[in-house]
Length: 402
Image (tube, rainbow, N blue to C red; front, top):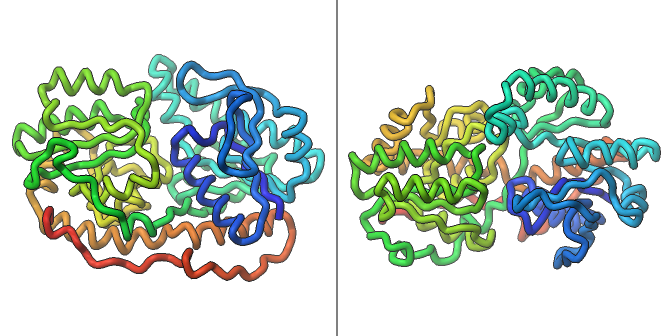
């Protein structure tokens, strides 16, 4: 098949959606399919990855996003040769799919990856909730009716779409993760490299440093927890518009010795940081299907998170969840997890088992079956190469910290 992935942004921009597209592209190409990514960027950008088709866009400040309402003539012509297109963002790529592909009868699949209502609250706090919700209720149902198939990464996200008035069938296909590097990591980053001691309990966050991740809340809770347990440490991996404010909060709170901002880390190095940490923590309430949480579970890390529906569905009983969410409640949960090796071990074992449900080899096969159904062709049997088989559950090897 010729498969077109339509995304508002792509590499080098780092996000869960970008990683998801790259993983699926890799799997589908190994299965013999031609996969193209259609996106926006500066005209002179060069890709190492083949078949990434970029149309010129206007940069949105320094966010890494580029805006455009059309593809280049060459991109449009190529897009219209696809057997199926998969839209990953509804507001720019979505209308272009309808404009370019619908008249040609090319099947359109749409995955809603993001809680756009919560993003609006994070980035436009002065805007009343009803305004953002009204816009979504006006746009999303009509867009979903116009495409051929709507995908949700989780049952919770499906419920959210239905609450916004989406009244077409919604199929749940989880976003997959390549578990192998996390189950069999290279040598961990040493604590000495970070200025930490062997006896420290290190919490890890991986993600965009933006308002939607609720990191100011996390830092306030972490500050409270450090007052009760001095050996707590926090490592934040990622970049984003909130970084300067977060660093300022760390300095004003007097916890510079306990927090490290690592900036963006190459994806192939991420397992080394996961292997170094004692637990993974996030306070985000906007997540739909966070790959970093699944990667943490596959690494044998206990997970501490908010009790949002999607996160709860993903982690199940493999996470320490906070409900209701408050700084005192999160600080208390951090303290309890840091001081209980048995609890960390129990969550880690459950997480290892749970992570196997999201092996990208299986989820990519499921999505390929969706493409074939959307295109109205029979689903062929696909043999997964031995090197791509789901990894076995490993035994625990965190005797140092557990």
